[in-house]
Length: 146
Image (tube, rainbow, N blue to C red):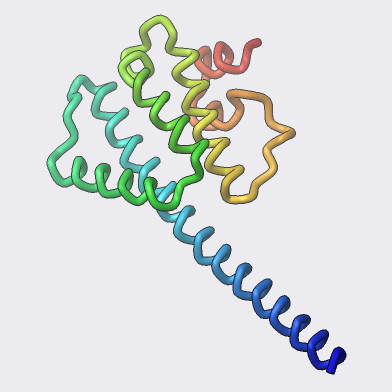
């Protein structure tokens, strides 16, 4: 009788572990899709702001809102917190006002938090190195300078 209960417990525990891994895999795919979507739309907005056109077209605004709604469901708490902080300083980031370096570092932190949520280990990267992939010249030097 005890052997049966022990075997049944093992089977149930293994089934639960397999199910947990399946759920994590589905969530990983959802998070990846949502993060790529919201970052893509954010870049569209930053490009428009840099070009002096601050408003996104209605279709892109709708896509951005939908992506942020998905973030509400799938993003880690730290990602949501950092995203909100980043949006508060978005004007400085786009306009290159004082505090622009800090705005760039905020963006770097949000991408790093997203990558951490997806399971990547970025411990070898210094702050600013993710965002520095996208810029060049003096901007890159000033971002990576301590």
